[in-house]
Each structure stands twice: as structure tokens, then as C-alpha cells.
Image (cartoon, rainbow over all chains, first blue to last red; front, side, top):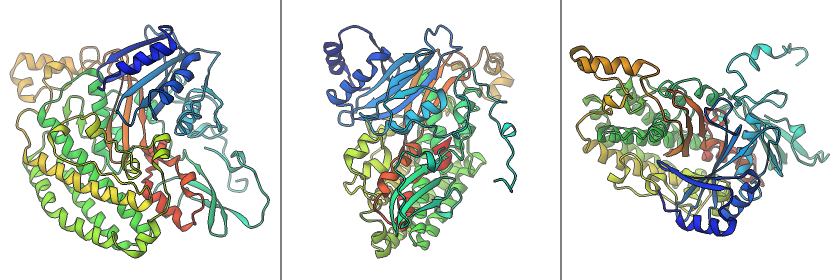
Length: 168
Length: 404
């Protein structure tokens, strides 16, 4: 685990104590920020603190999670390729406001990662250049990685309309 | 998945511009992926990747299988190097729980992960050579992969879908026969390796078809989240084995191979040199394999005690019963953790959310192939159709990992 105290100091002086809390768990260093601050924190991390690589963007649905207050938790994992520092930035979203600014302007690599989150969870990344479904067909209804989507039954092969050779 | 009509691009009605469908079933894609190429003459002016043909909901399944069962699904992700995926998954689970593995288990896992890397790179380089017209090197590489499959079969009974790791240990301990075979492989392989490099490194056809093709600069590689050999071929000096050493990697002496070339040829070179480094690690590990237990203490409630203990001691019997009970056995803490290993293709990480039960609440996989395939359209622009297969081969896209 690489020391992050310098970065935390910088963040504190830029954003104040408000709306972020830092924690460590085993090998991970995490920062929870408010959803409206998420983009500016990430921008600051990239432009000032040198976190130049975005490792992953993903989401967790906390619908049935014991003790959870928010529905969706976004996860951004960023890496500084010079110093090897890693930081996980979390932001929480609730229905019906499932919108968060896209980080594609900061990291090009976020393009497909955010599309996958949109595909699986239905979270809208505002400002994304090409927000379409990526793994599932365009006509697919629902967001399969949400906890209220069952493992079996919906969206399975036998539910699709059958196309015969003549029409296809 | 997307259709061409929806793609964000200007539709220009020019009769000299053709649309060519490449895949989803095409010998050079090796797996199931589709590309829609816009071509002018032989020049590719646009490429739209269309993925999702192999999507089978691995992450959803991960929320319904327990930590040991899900390892069988990870085999199917990057099926070229399943052992690396097994190691990645269980390492993520163990670091979520906070289990410390015995030295022997760490060494065996390192050997397996490195053999998986050799096997993956052999396929990647061999298939790239095959697609660019060098058939012999491909056969040499596949012959060695066959030897590796034999070793894996000796180890765990399966050639392809190994499912070898368990939370806190391994399915079985490595047998003396496995150790003998690995030592034999370490002895025999360099000869074949030299032959493959002689066939390709200065082969004019191969070099001309790969040098200067599909260039990825360092800035692009960093900005587009590229990891692994592809990033290292573009000058990003990052390797998780050195950056945040896991398992027993600090014990071994090896180099991180980097290059500033950034084209298909340098990606091939980096992979070939990495094979050499991996063999060094395997040699050191197999010659210094520590004795001792291969699994964590049964008191950790992660793994079944040995049959000897179960049948002959009451404590062993109680532990056995407790481990198989869902509310007394393995339980991950109510916490979230991300951990990754340097898989052959790049950083393979798992973001696991535990909820206090024996199943993951969320099992996100960070698939390197998915991130690398996003580069393809930009890499392809301005090159000819015949370069498509060279670029695809050098990215080593595994569709099962791409779509999960």
C-alpha cells in the first residue's frame, strides 16, 4: 500500500472537510464523496495529483444489503502510473436521480466501462459521447445486474420472438 | 450490442466506400466477435466493434454461487490461461477475508500463474504469426501448449477448465510427478523457444506485416486504461508483480519487459521476452518449493480438514461439519475489496462485496480484453484490411473474457 497522505492533504485544502470520508481496508484505500462533487474530485485527482490512469468503473446495487442507506454505489479505481498510488473513489446515487457526469473527458478509457455500467444498471452518465447498450442487444428491456432483476426467467432465450428463415 | 445504423457517425453516400462485415464467425477473429469495417479500396477508414455475442452473465452468476463454486466460472473467462483466473479470483476472495496463505501454496500458485502466462503468450504470438502467414511458428507454439496441458492434467485432472484453487489453498497438493514434469519442461522449453524466435524475430514477411502497424503511444495507453504487455510495449513501466507484490513474487529474481515501440511487432517482442522471464520464475520456484502444508489451518473455517483428522479426531470431525454448514463455515466479512493480479493479458481484478455470507453480494471482474478491444477502432484507422488480423492478434482479444 503506497502512502496517500500527500494526496489527502491536497484534497482537504481544495474541497475542505465537507462530504468526503477516507478509510482503509486491507489493501484498499477508499474515498467516499458526494455524487455532485464526484466529477470535480476525479478531475482534481487527475490534473493535480497525477492519477493518470482509470483502472475500473463499476457499480454496486445495495437494494438488499443490510444497513445500506443508498441504492447504487459507483466505484472508480484510479492509479498514478508514476508513483503507483491507487485510490478507490465511491459515490452514491438514489432513484430517481440516477445521473452522474461522465468521466470520458478525463479518461478516454472510461468510454466502454461507463457503457457497461449503463447497460447493466441503467445509470446515466451525462456528457458521455456514445451512451448505448454494449453487451446486451439494443432491444433488451431491464437492467440485469440490479438486485430486483431475477437470475432466471426474464430475458431468456425462450421469451424472444421466433424469427423464421423466410423473415430473417 | 449495436447496429451499424445507430452508430454515431456521418453516413456519407460515396460509392467507393464499402462496408465490410468481419465476423462474428471468422477464422481470424479466433473467437466470437464482430467488426463492421468501413473501407476505401483496401484502406480501413472506420471500424465499429460489435460485442456481446458471448455474454453469459458471469457477474450475475457470481452473486448466486459461493466463493468456491465460482472458480469454475472463472475458468471460462480467459480460457487460454484459466489457472491465472483461478488464482486471481481466490486471491481477491482471500484478501477480502484477510487469509494468509502458507508458503508452499503461494509457490505453487506462482508456478501455475507463470505457466499460464507462458501458455497464453505462446497462443497469442503463435496465432498472430499464423494470421500473418507464418504457420510453422504456430505449430511449434501449440506443441508446447500441449505439453503444458499435459502438466495441468497431471496436476488436477483437467486440461482446460482447471478450477484448481480453493479459498485458502488448493484442490490438491502438487504431486512429485507434477514437479518432475515441470522440471522437464523448464529443461526442454528453451530449445523450442529459441526456434520460435528464430522463425519470427527476423522473418521479413512477419516483421513487415507487424512493424509500424497499430501504434499505441504511451499517453494513449495511459489515458485508455491499458495494462499488461500491451501497455509495457508502449513504454508504461507498470507490472503488478513488482508494484504491489502478491503471493511469493518478492522471492524471485525477474525483469519487467518494456519497450517504446508501441506497434504490433513490439507487443509480440514483449510477450516473447516475458515468456523467458516467466520461465526464470518457474525455474526458481520449482527448485525452491518449500515443504509444509498447502492449505491454511482448518481452524480458519475456510477449507476442509484432512480425512485423517476427520476420521480419527473429534476436533477434526467437528471442524468438518462446521465448514460444510452454511452458517458456520466460510463467511466473508461485510466489506468491499478490490484486488488484482498481473494476468497474462493485463490487470485482472475482482471487486468483491461481501455481505457476511458465503456468497459474494457483487463480484465485479475487471477484464483486460474488454478494455483493450476498445482501442481497436483507433488503432485500425488508416491501415489496410490485411492489418486487421495483425492488430487483433497483437491485442490478444479473448471473447469469453470480453463479454463475460
